[in-house]
Image (cartoon, rainbow, N blue to C red; front, side, top):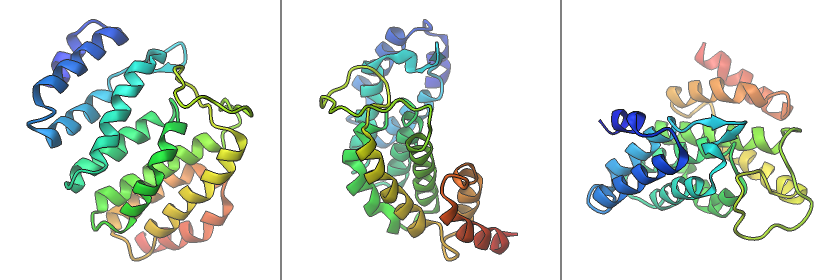
Length: 212
């Protein structure tokens, strides 16, 4: 029902943001797990305009990011999986705010949930795709803590530092012993970054033969 109502509201960032805030005021405190699931579903309906995700609206990005940030610490593995899904969808908008969450995200590699582990692979893929994308906007200058424009504003040094962390998560999750459903997610999503990270090839082929 929330998705239907969302699709029929005025097609603009401000209108959608008003709806999101209204949903938050109604159920965020009383039904927090359902709230995170709804917000994750609605994010897919926000549009790209002039090449900018979420209409280039930093307030909308902040809203979704804060929902994901809080849900990372919920006890429900399902809600944490939805949180990672939100972050994966936000990665093409702006990756740098997520760097502060990496220590908490990395602790999830041992959670016995194939969906959560699969979402870790999806997030790692999205992040690495941005970090190694020549078209991504990088800045060699220090950026303020709060960047209002939705853009990739990390530095070259930050990229070099964070790439190994995402690769380490893949190495820990994407194994021959992980659930087959997680393996299939990895095979689907990691195929797009094999060229950029050839060290993944051996593991990828090993699991591909194991699943086949």
